[in-house]
Image (cartoon, rainbow, N blue to C red; front, side, top):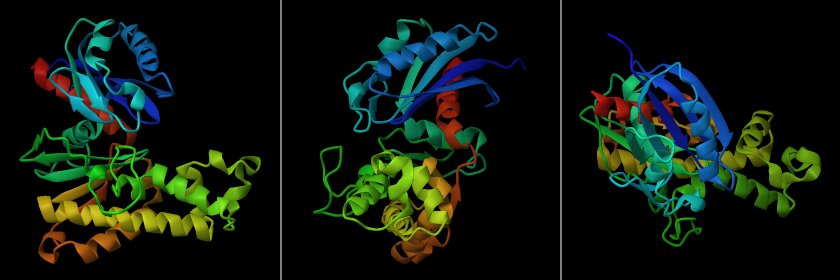
Length: 310
């Protein structure tokens, strides 16, 4: 059978990733740019590059976006981590350059669909994917199909009187367990003169610290980095327990940059989830890492296109 091709784009809070994907789920051509302060302009730049690759005749473009998406219209209803996109009709923006099939979806939903297609979930009928990056997102696969709901796992409340969240609520999981939360907590501790190797990075400008810096420093034994990651992990564990208790999936697949801190952050989450979830449900769930990594969203977005092209 002749392979078809589609463009998959994943617009996240930190980066926009895009690729030409074939109908077997293989990445043929990939690029990445920082989302920055002008995400629509960055999107157009990426599209120009991809559409110039005439070696492939694409049957459509799938776009995964962090936030609440009106998939029928292609409008970003709200994107707490990319506020410049709120209210933007991404579908119409793409159609300025491409006149074929254009589909939009929440980024975590697309990532879950990607994992179902060729990743860690390809042999699972029911699982929940949780993305752990700038924010926290979720996607649900049930009966082998993507459940088309918001699945905003990062905005479940875990503390009724807790920290403010970018979404406007307080006490959201994202405010306690995301990369943004981890970085913010480390910076706050350093400002309060807690000792850490991290304060000497970037010539003392610790406001440039990244989540990767924190994990690497934690592996070197830095007490602050390890403490902050463990606390974030415990909060993630509360969220996972809630997911297990509500949906009783066969697996929870964890994706995103923070999974690099598996042996500190995720281990703490698994331990906490085991304490809080109903034992009968927890005992049947497998908590595992994504196998597609950063490619899950772009592959899932392309798969949505292939389903329509068929």
